Length: 175
Image 1 (cartoon, one colour):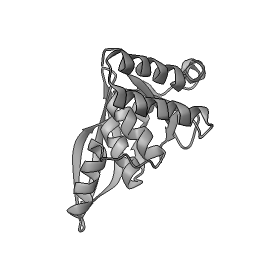
Image 2 (cartoon, helix red, strand yellow; image 1 turned 120 degrees about the vertical axis):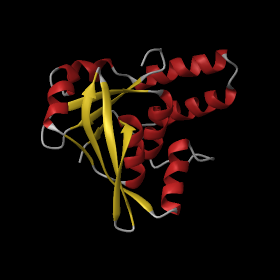
Image 3 (spheres, one colour; image 1 turned 45 degrees about the horizontal axis):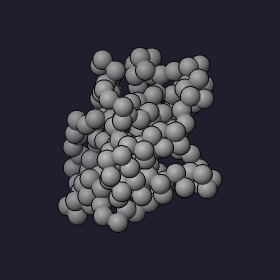
Image 4 (cartoon, one colour; image 1 turned 90 degrees about the vertical axis):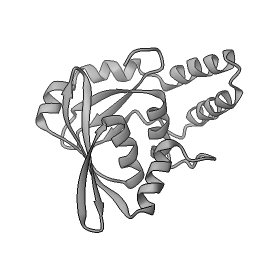
């Protein structure tokens, strides 16, 4: 993924201090933040819509499995259940995680992914360098320059929430 509108998601392995940093796009970041904070947007986001459709047809997500990394791209599987029948779907890790959060489904990986992408020492520097307020302020400036005031208002509200001390979600623990 190239461009300036990228975000970093940190998944923490439950049994250790290993982290998996995953670069994600702005829409996936928004979907993950919304789900993590249990927010209900005025209109459903794409992941919310997809979740609602799945539930409407009796489909539930049982687990997410991030099974490989190829050229820094994470590959995941979404394991779904519909009335006792299990089916797996190939997915981008960011989409799978956004959906897993909505279904409160566990997220798994394997030793190979941890070996290839996992990090322990470098995550300390990353956490120090990662400032979500700075990223949001840059996005706010861009939205204002483009005269996209609706987006600017949402970003402003998110900045106010962060500054209000409601928490900073830097990582999502894997189950």
